[in-house]
Amino acid sequence: MKKIYSILLPLLLTAGMLAGCNQADQNSGSDKPAASQTAEKASFPVTVKDAAGKEITIDKAPDKIVSLMPSNTEIAYDLGLGKNITGVSDFDNYPEEAMKKEKVGDAEKLNVEKILGMKPDLVLAHESSLNTSGDSLDQLRNAGIKVLVVNDAETFDEVYKSIELIGKASGKSEEAAKTVRQMQNQIAVIKQKAKSISAEQQKTVYVEVSPAPDIFTAGKGTFIDEILKAIGAKNAAEDAKGWAKMTEEAAVKLNPDSIVTTYGDYIKDPVKQIESRKGWESVSALKNKEIYNVNSDQVTRPGPRLAEGAEELAKIIYPDIYKK
Image (tube, rainbow, N blue to C red; front, side):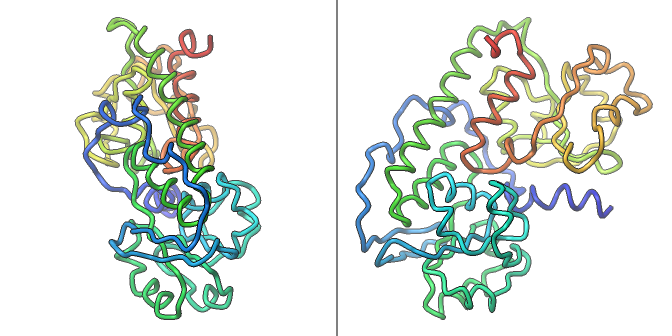
């Protein structure tokens, strides 16, 4: 049980474990330019409205930043703020330099005293942790620290907004605009190639985010579902909502063409683990030897690497189309 908890908790923290309405076809990779593409010159003071509905006025470019969510940290590093990061959450693991920063707890329990001792100019909090860390964030605000609550993104467009928000608050709007454009271009290329996939070629994909005995898959309202649609695949669990628990019998009944696991960093050889399951012999993915593992963070963490995760998944599922 402890092993399963270690797999699912990062998903809870980085993806919100919320079942939102999936707007993949309407939103992600849209050809329409994001608002951030009209980049602003860094100027202070700047006032931004965060996901908690609070207006925060930041007087100058923050020199010391504490990030309380791995996705916030990835965005900050991507915008060139690595040197300004003084503290991160216990679950921060990317980029490698972030793992060397001071740990300040997680969404369940923040070390408020340690954060206060760092005297940060800006704390990057997260909407998904308001219920568990709201009191701690109030303590930081009462101490005069600027706390920015970043939206709990569930679609690519919402990730773009997260990047824009952090960029504006830190004086990195131009860098944020560049990152958004790059992600949009990557998704646009993927969607364009997906148009060549015929109905006969389309594959049904089952993504397993937690292994037996507590099997979880990705349904509607997850980045994985949005990515599968973007690459031209069908989510075998499209009738499920959010991160859904499955029985082995139900998973076998889905009979997917391909199986993708996202827990290879936690369990040794997940492909063999699935191949050895009794009763799974008849599943098309096992017959065709189409079982793969991808990095969980790249396809669930709402940050700049999501587009890379989409590309990787596309090349795995449709190598003839996406490896050209």
